[in-house]
Length: 431
Ligand code: SF4
Figure 1 (tube, helix red, strand yellow):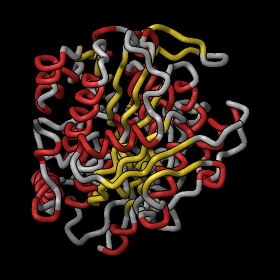
Figure 2 (tube, rainbow, N blue to C red):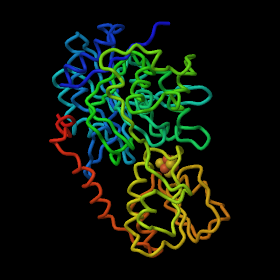
Figure 3 (tube, helix red, strand yellow):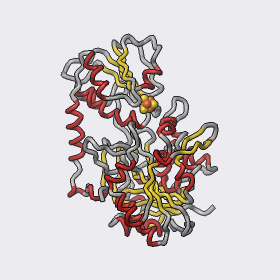
């Protein structure tokens, strides 16, 4: 078997660099002019209410525009861009397309913008159970996968294989975060069912402590491309300081396709030298060794509360609320210890004995603990995902008063820390 080729290109301007990355890996070699091409960016989420720094969180619009222009120049006329956004009260894909200026792609190049949530899903057997996968993704002749170079707090890195989770219905996304089915053995199955012809990792920004906007972004200025999604992810992981053999889902994906884990020595690298750009990015926040909460809580002297570290059974919709939960709890600390509270989330955590109150964050934690004899008094925030307003109300009834303004201030802080003079430019996203 010939070695898969992966190109690494320094970003100068999006058009030149994407073109170079594709050419270096012969990215369009197997494309035919009549192919229906689906581009899958990572634009699974946006926040229309609070400041949202998209750096390293979503694919830059500049890269998507460059890619469409290149395809158009090469004579490809049947191009669509699709995403199934997260969103509890309806899909927000069209709103995000509009916010980012994707409508210009439709006007200038005839690109079809597809909200997978509206377009529909087909059930596909992925090995003993079914996933609802976007019809458009299944019907496309070729998919160009355009993830971001980022870390992920539940599976270390989030690259091409992980980006395909955005092709699932909301229910199937949740299914990936099962009680028994492990996340890292779930989403890699999607890639086996889709015609991924090219992966282009957008590393203009890279994200530590991802996958969301509370992580820390860096201007990385790289593009990584390959016709081999696994090899592309292996290189992307190495650029963030992760060895593929230590990332469970990369091993799992490789094993299922009959390959041993692809090592860097099995890959033909073209372009920039990997070792000139590899930097370690932490994927997670430090947690107290006794699992009593984030290390930051201990530093602030917050006691009387044990917040159990979330696990991979926590869906993305709940994960997005975990940071606000921590900030709200922290805002309620006024110097006195909390009254002996244990905080549980996801589908696997069970209440321990010895606590006065148990905060059950979300429907799953409530179900998992509904008959748990260790619970003296439950504070059950039952929604799916739970509602922060209800959380504050229930805590206030217990004499614990959160300050939502502190969360808003935090969001302003994480947005304002990125400066244009340091290369953080919203023009890369809003066209
Ligand atoms: S409560 Fe949270 S973890 Fe449970 S299914 Fe809903 S979003 Fe997922």
